[in-house]
Length: 442
Image (cartoon, rainbow, N blue to C red; front, side):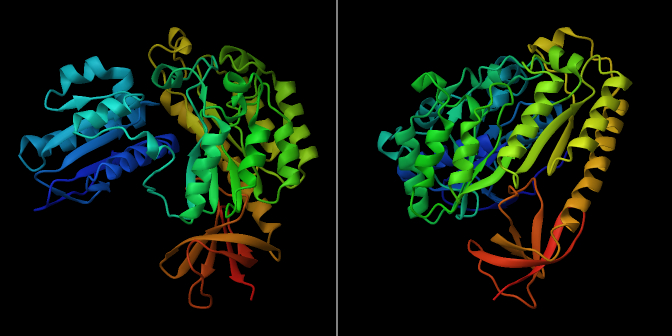
């Protein structure tokens, strides 16, 4: 596990927030930093140089084994710096702390404070800051200004057997539409052009507040915000999928033809044991219905290999389905046996080596599918959002790609000029497995 390269400097006291894990954690860190900044603190994100008076706040992930280990390693690294007198305090928050606080407190004794996922106000008080209600919606972005993760709900009500998120994040709580629209307007005013909607389960949105699934209304309201040019959907749940959101997608140009819907598996035995509330045939029908309604949509999914009881036949069924379905984007995880989940009572009977081999085999299939789909884009023009300049290329994305996890468009910086955060039209000249190459069309 990598550890961060940290340099020591003399500096004024400040708060250095270190974020581990998913985009929901990034969002939480940004809200925390916005509150600290509003309290006139000097706040930085993941500073490479630390000072002896720094307060380091580590926002941890507790999702699967690798993420938990990275969080523990980071806590140990900073607690050792504190022990050496090279930083002032260490505060730990987030999912790992929520889930394992008693055990962590007993093992790592020189951390100053431990907080859970819903302890923002208590954390602020511990450093002498007040929670400012007038700052709701204000954040200190850690992403480039032109895109922002946009959390519309917290927690999850789904009973998935393998997932510990409800243990760490609690039940589903939707944010009111008016509050989200106000936040979107504030982001747009400061230069944000793309909202990436996140939640543990986007498609459950509104049931608790409005007694109905209300994501389609939220999408239309956000689509009306001046300055927002792309709205992207991540983490949709297949069971009870609200088809109305596809109508909104078709109606509004600034709602990306993109959907991230983790399906996890396709074998009926696996889906039943995973408590997914859907069958193989219903999954196939749903994917077909989505594609029929939005023919140009890019579908991203995530799968799990090596779930307890997964036979070679179950896996071959998943392989065949991936080959037939031809997802535009796909990620694969090996199963992680998590305490206090329903699946923890099952025998973790697939060897780690087999889990990884199966994951690699799925990704090899997807690599071929991605290459073929990318070849079909050669010669076409796309609207591209420029994210950054890296080496000799400007790096951007089409509406069919989310940052960090999906394909990129690479534009030769010796022949073209673009400003990060702007949209350009790009003609695709060539393509690889996961990258497109093109030139800006004047």
